[in-house]
Image 1 (cartoon, rainbow, N blue to C red):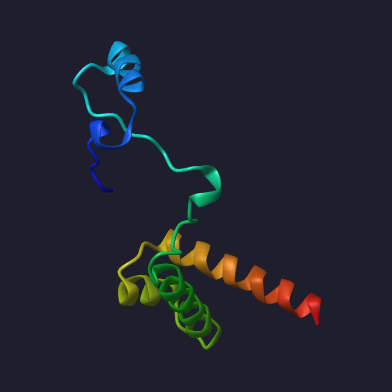
Image 2: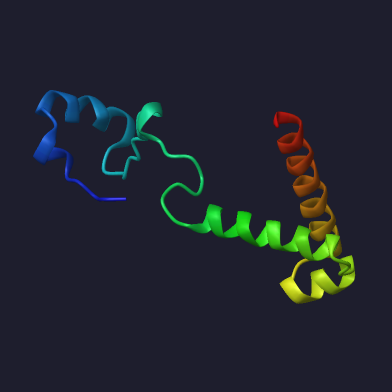
Length: 98
């Protein structure tokens, strides 16, 4: 987030109105809704996690235990179970589309 001096971009009368509410304080102005990006759009994290989750599901279907996967991927057993459930649901939905 970039810091911008209000005096450099806003008219004096607007600054005076804002000072009635936040005199001397920093004020955050959120982006317009259409400018916001969804989680994971700025980095590859979302894609990386999707690949990891697919790998976990594949390993599970090939015989790896939930405990082994939890230890290998440094996740809780509940997290592994949730990932398996989600990936299974994705696979089922994909097969219905075909």
